[in-house]
Length: 465
Image 1 (spheres, rainbow, N blue to C red):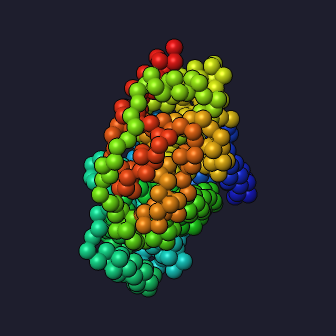
Image 2: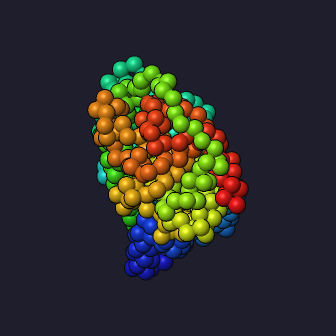
Image 3: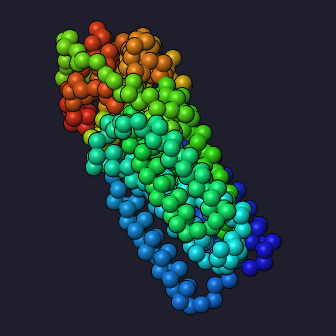
């Protein structure tokens, strides 16, 4: 393929990837964003295959078989995966990207001629640096993503697992990796390459294992960023413009999103990416409260909402677990039929991954113009008659604004307590990810609806007639 034509094709693919990210920033344009990303990836893959100049039928057979098998597995998973399992699916996919980076780096090290980066024992220094960074970041991404998957999927405790002297351990591992990379550039010995890889695998575990469930949305975004940087580093080794552009886009956008989410959770960005530094304090909680709460039934909730002028729905992970989004939309339609204004308030870190609640509501065909982010709707709670909180906890806790001793103090939360009535759907009085009691439970204007989120919402729908 003509190099100029290939460069143009990669440029078009890069533009489509940028448009994909732009489209995915809003539910309204997300489908078009996905289409742009798919078209861009097809162009990039086809161009790469043509650039390589593969002519051997066996090689083409292996490539086509790999694409077919991978595509079939991906399509099957996409059709069968439950929305509640989406966070761990994303973590699993990140692990595959990390392992791909490790394998490509290994292939480049053992067959440098095929990658035009020198000969065995005489690989270009620049390529060795790129290769080392790719394999190190890829290995960290793989093992870190596996730990994140295990925590999210319930295969291991979601609570922070605090290793003795973990910060010193992480520092020593990081310095050892840097030192080995320098030595690798000079010596090019296989054992150094694999030492870097093994240490990076260990580093991914020690970085992610101390991070608790409350910080999982940031971890998912952070690992996404790591996978991008690993791809970008190997893009230089492979001299693949599309891989460099795509990796840089994923890496930078993931890093920016992680920073925004840390700000939304009142977490230190440096602390989280350094392996939950200070996580002992954030995870600390106090003794459970025994104060009485006001309890209600589905009939009570239906009566209150039917006679309200406006209702703001606040979804959380409890809604996702119960798969209550469809029942919620049905309830909203009945309320709107009664002349009640219904809107949805989304906290940036509600759920277990960025945009979790938006995706669930979109799945239930909730109109996009009824869904608002925290900064756009917080001022409206004071004028709302009812705030219907369905499975959200820490993101509605007034302690974040009133109690300097609270682990979540300073975290921006939804001002649901300002509504005339708060209907709080929850299975019990358990705490959220932060491990602290929600002060909202005990407010005079709060009515607790103890039940499964879907079952309670369906009962409210029946009571509404």
